[in-house]
Length: 204
Image 1 (tube, rainbow, N blue to C red):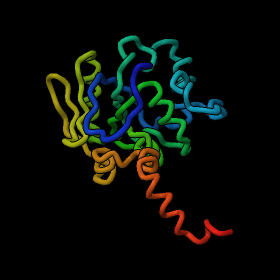
Image 2 (image 1 turned 180 degrees about the vertical axis):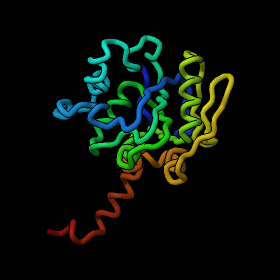
Image 3 (image 1 turned 180 degrees about the horizontal axis):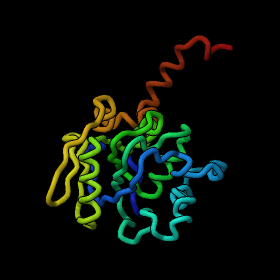
């Protein structure tokens, strides 16, 4: 778990760090964060509970528990990652654990959107290419990795792989438009002026 990582903000052009792999298709949001943790008042503690049941079953051998993966911020997954319910707690838990970018074969649509809303890029590649990246992650652990949003590429110190990022999300990440809250704050005065002109909000 990367407790020192700051949350995403502003334009996101690339993510530097270390990568690790979580193998398996159809990993759903119930596994990412079990339903009993949805009662939380805030998202702050969810990082500690990400994959809670899977980790308990693996007794320290789950990728999110292994010593060599602590501090990693790029996650490599397989097909249909984040399927199941639409709970935003799943990407919130991953972000609070320290994940800042995800590469996989495919993502569930709502999960993908929830990640984008937090500034977590989700890039895709073919099955064969993802398997190559996962193999490289295992054999080249603790190398420097870069997930380059603008170039749609992931690389370590020896190899690189081309990825796919949808044009709309890519533009939002590069410009910083993914952060709706910051946009609202930055345009507070313009919003106040607009609100003052709306008759159904004035002179009641």
